[in-house]
Length: 410
Image 1: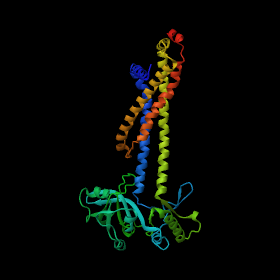
Image 2 (image 1 turned 90 degrees about the vertical axis):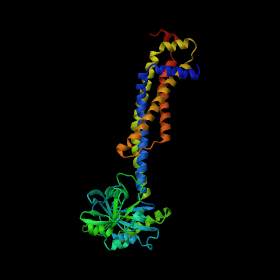
Image 3 (image 1 turned 180 degrees about the vertical axis):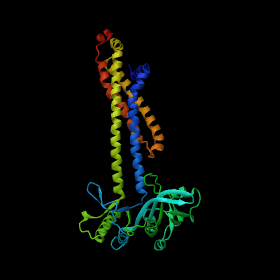
Image 4 (image 1 turned 90 degrees about the horizontal axis):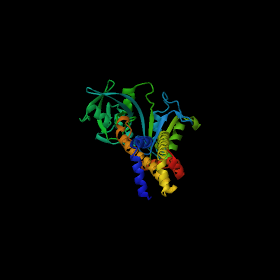
């Protein structure tokens, strides 16, 4: 019996027990779909996080109050006010920090912004004119805040495109008035989109005001010179490390700290943030992939179980074929082909189910699912391999049957 006849005979055998074959494939189908969705979810989450981090700017360092321990737990965060406007001014000196191209202190608060009868809760960010350059943002309409706005505590605001859309719909917001708390602010500009769709921190949904306006008019408090973060832009990707060292040393000097391990601030680079985010998403992907692998293992055991049942039911057929000259190799090959066909069919159906899930799920969980061709092809090959591996024992059992004993069986 050649390969064509073997495949045709195997398909006929599977078709004769459609229900049983379908249920056998179910385990592999679910496992393959889970693998596709798990890998796609991991890659989608990684791309989303990378997009959100890259939307912060280029060649960027982010300095925040409080130090981080070796275990990654930040100390002194929350009420910490260890960063001030003076720190930002010191870092802006090209004399002490020649590899720093720009500095932008920032303080923000999530609050309600009102325009006419529309209320929208967004992040109101107080900063300086350097914010747009350091964060790599451009203005689509109007203008950005200026040094004169900061000096004059000007009641002005620049809206992100998402904020402008929520407050003014399709209308032109420039020249209109929005109210933060009880303070009216004139909209002087609208930012271009940052290209980030992260629901956790949408860079397009915020309002930028002069930092003096934020501290004196909007946020208040007794620590009006403190800032929540300082964004530092290195002159280039090659000088990012040097800029890190210069910022670190300058802040240690201005804070009169001699032991770097006792620093009251933390400097994070985009690469560090990306590495951390990538590590987290990979860990989650591996964890979920392990669960999917268990499902595939259960599916493989199901294949072996059904193939053993099939061998038992077809003992007389096996004996008859051996009696007319079929070799053990031919018998073993037929049952292996049947097991591999079950795995292949389960894998293909699992891929279809996984792709359907990748289309439907993002609307429910707000995370894109990226279908990986490599993972898809790998999943199909894995499903075939599972069928073959778990079909070896039943096929070998059938191949070892003696013709006389098989023909005598009831």
